[in-house]
Length: 407
Image (tube, rainbow, N blue to C red; front, top):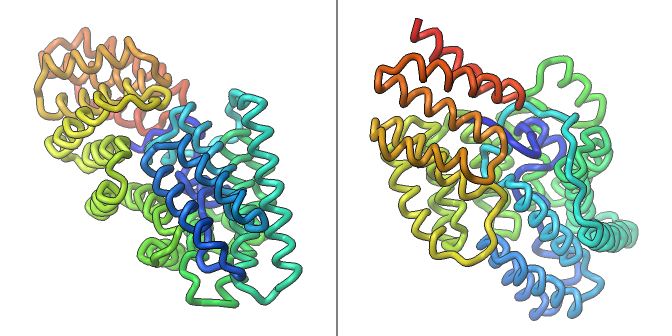
């Protein structure tokens, strides 16, 4: 189920734009002038809060870190990152499903609230100024290049996801790639710098040949195996970047059909960030993609218990997602009445249109299980209309197979 919704970015363009999950929230250790212990502790605490979905508390901790060490670019970038993550949360772009599929640059985006956009830009501009000053002051310092590259990478992330400016993201993405390659040249032990380089290399390797050539001319290197190895190294290297690399691997492993590896990474993230209920939704989505509906159902039951007792804000369409994935698991398990109830709830809830298309497809499967071909045909046709309008090729391809099988 490699459907995408906003920002409709494939791992290919995720790599080129730096838009894989929370890659913008990367900080570096060590830095040239270590910040005060209190600042470093606040930043570590804020990252933990952010990955546990405590976004407001994370934002406050990053701002406190800025107050303690105003010359460190990392906390400014992380404030901007937190604001960006909140915007994606509002859009409902929260799972690997949202980063798989075909990249599109022609989607209309809902403009972010002006005050959030202004706060984002102010913090990112400060991070850019401070990190560029570090490179000028010490051009042979690997961390200075890392900081500058991470900030440019995040600028590309924002332009590609929130603003929908694919072409506008290429310049800062190229700068991020170059700065992190330079960091690796200066200090090969900096495995954290391999994340962005690896993402771009892997992403370019999956492009069709003409686009690979254009990417090469734009300054991006390719190499699927090399890129994946760099990301895996970053995921196993203790640093602030490590969780970002792990989230990135969930997307890549799903794309590669390595579902067992994806589930292993998700389980480790669940252990680290038990308040992030979306990790149980991610586990269910991956299990369904792997054809393991019983495993998906188990993950959903545990996740729904967390969801129902969690008073914190919900992502756009989140309730509909819980219903959809549970409904899909129950269809696969042939638990008909319960599946129909879950899928009907999707259609009655706030949800992205692509999810409604998927729900109609599952309802068509249910009708087929009952032997009601007339209803199944109507559901499949409704689903096909929505999936094609949403450019959901995975859904429409599956529907083609289902409809041909019924002839």
